[in-house]
Image 1 (cartoon, rainbow, N blue to C red):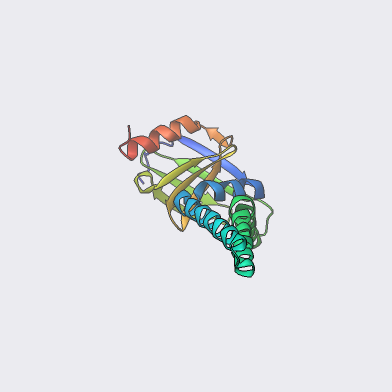
Image 2: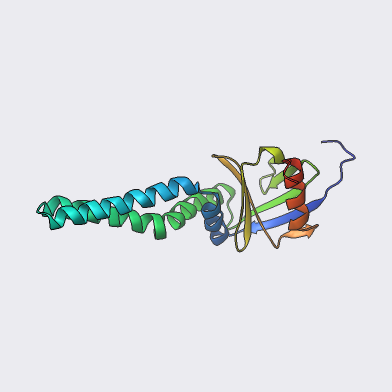
Length: 172
């Protein structure tokens, strides 16, 4: 990063548990989630068929397992996984929220967390961008994502950031 480079936007966000859970939903691979739900439904159907054709114990076991998987995927997984990850992060930081400051430049962003760690990330490496009710998630790979609040901009706005990202990724 050159010293003369101009900040195009700045976001200072305090990520709460609810925001973190929302970011988990946005960054989840939808294909894997869809396959899991489909397999759960198959188990329910196979189990129901088995229960009605004489293999009652096996049929009920399959149907119940399928229903449990379905309920987990549709209603529970995001909250459990998001809450668990959030708890780990706040315990490491010793706070009840995650504070992030993100400076957006022409072709990259610089992320500063509350521990003073600084990361420079190129927009072209973004694999997915998710927009939720309160947060935006930039997924760089399966293990690394950046979450920030839509209303956390102290300079610039989300539209500016979106334009920067699309331009750097050759989508504009």
